[in-house]
Image 1 (tube, rainbow, N blue to C red):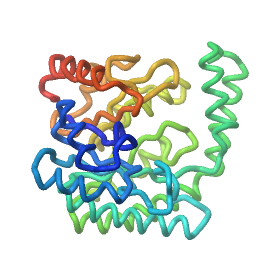
Image 2: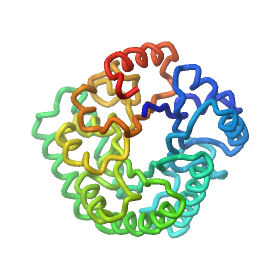
Image 3: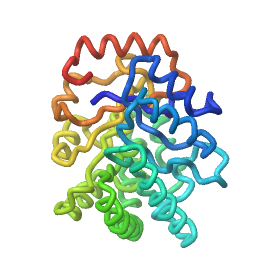
Image 4: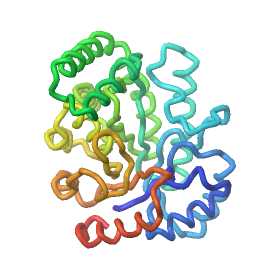
Length: 308
């Protein structure tokens, strides 16, 4: 199933119906309802849904956004937070999102599980800068990366436990409503879970058919570019747990959410790990041009007709 995320044009619309119509006009009939959506757009989205002009492939937490959060901030509340209020708010908003997902007949809910409290300005950002400057093999880069990994390994267990605890509770509700929980690969190594933790998480829920893995092509490529993993090897390892993926491209080294075929990703090589029936959702930056998207869609249909 090929789908399109509403993150592309959400910010340009005040009415949900016209937002959906613009996506349909691009050539997509399956839509993922994404985070950052104000509750005011829901009536219009419902109208478009009742008209039958789109089907909802899935929903991205939180949908709609918490009313008190005035910007697109899917990580405003984290399951891993040291603040009990934030953890409870994250739980409440997720359960509400599951209800909305059920209303629209969504097959899955994409979840961010939180983070380890390590400042990206001290870790991910300096590493990215060194890679952009061509210093990815310098001793300073290697030293910083190893220190980053060791520090995270030391402090992460508490936050992993909180993520598992939250997911256990959410999975009970997901089973009741029949919506799969898709745990997304994240772009920063500070985020929870990292790849080792993701494998542990999937093993923990091995007997639960409502929990699986969501592969974000761009996020994983950013880690690949930092030498934190091998994109192809990771996808091969995690593929038995795949629910679907966010498709976008990456311009070297860290500009993601670009239109497919405009960056460095080898889709033909990566897609072989995806069963043809799983949802592939184009998740593009609002800055991407509609004509560029249409052109890329035509190329996609020509190169991957069984995934269109």
